Length: 361
Image (cartoon, rainbow, N blue to C red; front, top):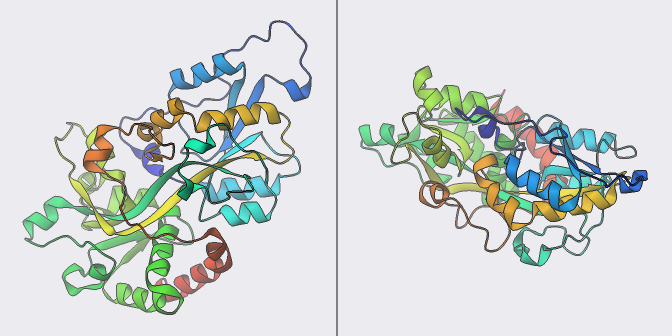
């Protein structure tokens, strides 16, 4: 998920760069490279964790965590592929199901069955049996709507993909470029999953005829074009529909100033595509033991329960508590579109190419 650039953009969220923070005490014993006390996590720019949660892991494990951020998810995965023989770190976090096969086919990861994996819901274990990656979180890419706009116009907000091509919603939707944006790609995959190989292009022709606007990335779409976001309201935005995340409405509440009592935005739950995000032990990792401990930590209850309000995603561990704001304002979609990673790998590039010529030209 490149995921939630929402995190970086959320007003008032002070992300702390966690590069080699914390302390460790090796008791004065000499450590070989394989017993190094530093474990390096390579991730996308949306990585975040509470300092106290990370500090507890460092104290209990004896490992010091160093974090290297490598741009958005696509950039980070491509760099991991290019550096697989001499990786930048020990664990990679942030490859999602839209990019998973690319990483697996290029041998980026080595197998490791994480401790606690039995507590992770089987539907997210897309590499079950081989254990080259471990699911850590999931989220839904969905159309968000501006509640005030639809109330003022006495118009029901759209609920499904089919609704978006109706005349009532002409010139209302802004989405992201599927070739440059994670949510843009997710939305394209959602339409391909919904309408199939034969009909998704016809759907996009209708969407284009209905005035869909395409911009490069989420930041521009959500904070400049979408009338329902805090940034959009300030910018005088005029599009009341945007491709974003199911967890965007809770963020509008949590970071609102003043804080609203209810979310100003809603989710068209029949437009959602599910992203699952994974971590894996990098092939040729210098500190594989530390890497294994770090992966175990990523699916442990402390991290899983800390994650939603830091990265605006949902935990995969059974029984992990979800913040009240999520259940009230941004519940996960009950029946999102999904697609097998192998299908995505086989068709993604051609779909994006076809989409580009169809929608942008």
